Image 1 (tube, helix red, strand yellow):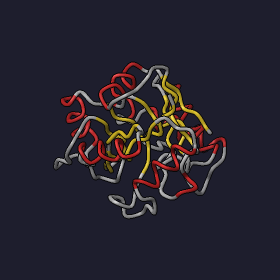
Image 2: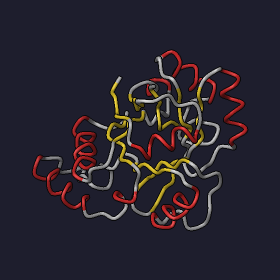
Image 3: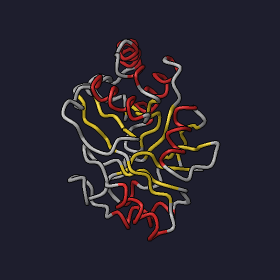
Image 4: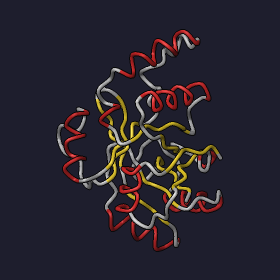
Length: 210
């Protein structure tokens, strides 16, 4: 199954131009099997997400992209934002208590120096990133981000490999042309949020560029 784990809509993300219905229509046209709604620091009401799914006959899974002091994290299994989630360790504690999953979004950001993108700079950044405590606390890393450059996504994939963590794929869609660029291929059928969390924790998936 192909599921885009990282999308934004204008209903709850100020920087997106996509309506929820448009996102789903475009995802279906791109032959995806589902999408995750991961707005910036906003949790979709699970009933509202279910209504969207029923309206389109399409898998829609609620999540959230939490902004922490050390990077962005895709969270699944939580329903509300709690004070302190901007600290990655507090966020990890909430996710663990809920039996959820967390994926480090575009981990190349804040790691690779934008003004010095040389092989040497990437190698040095990789060694620094390996020591960062956020990443080992995650269920997975986002290995393919639709808005990342090939070298940036290669950095993320290398980081996941070094940390022996599985990698996901997500379009990070904010506008129509973003939808369908990347996704996560799951080995087993996903029909619910609980299914997806179980598969994320089991590691039975890989990122794909479409």
